[in-house]
Amino acid sequence: MAKPRRLSKRQRERIGQIQEQRRERLHKRAAGDEDAKAQGVEQGGEVVVRNGRHFVVIDAEGKLRECVARTNIGHPVCGDRVVWQETETGKGIITALLERSSVLARPDFSGRDKPLAANIDRLIILIAPQPEPSPYLIDQYLVTAELIGIPAIIAINKVDLLGDDPATFLDRFGHYREIGYSLIAISAKREHGLDPIIECLRDHTGILLGQSGVGKSSLINALLPDRDVQVGMLSEATGLGRHTTSAATRYTLPHGGHLIDSPGVRSFRLANPSRGELERGFREFAPYLGRCRFADCRHDQEPECAIRGAVEAGKIHPDRLGNFLHMVAAAERGTKFEG
Image (spheres, helix red, strand yellow):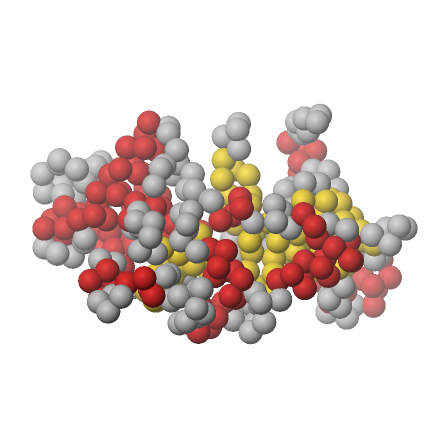
């Protein structure tokens, strides 16, 4: 595959201006401006599947359109709101991206951020008694949610395996509730306790994250009883539906809202953020940042560290500080975080 040519600053500015003009025409058309309607056939839509260079866009009437994207408009991904035009073949071409409210990205081989999904506003972290939960991985996911600015909930699956005394296991994660995260117990296999997740996703777009073996597929099947029907509709309309097991796909939930799913999204791991970003990613650190004796305090061995003082006072769980220091060390080594 040929590498995309590098654009000059002037070329990038010109492409940006053209995209902005397309967005403006779309907004005017949506507002009923007759002059704007006469200018072209730009339409609004949302990407529901991306498979390589091919996309499935759902239009304002709910019809599915197979599309390609213009070169140099950016990197459209599942969940993107886009401007598109119908082509002579009855298919379409994406001509511009609309502003994203959030984006989930990971670095590519060259170190540049590669978007995976866009406009997500809910993140569900799934853990279970088996396999043994990784608090470090949980904190990676929570930092991700904090940095992209979306609410996260922690769902404990397979509670049916806990027997008559689930409290001992659940109490291990009580400190997350104390710092403001929702913590719910469910059994996806038995479809027990799913109402809080259904309500969390109603009128929102979410993703599901968790280590292998925690029951992500079971939960997705419970939330999407008509998933095969939706895949069939995609396949019938575009011929791309058969690839949804590997392509990022935005499914419609029966009670309202959407769920974006793909192996790449489910296995997402945090990129290597800066120390400052990691500090912001641990929400309970906020009252103590800037109060350490030294401005460049690492919150490790330095005297009069406000963060360590909060740990000693019981305001910050020691495991959270330990995971923060582990993440900082991994980022400084330039290595990928591991659960």
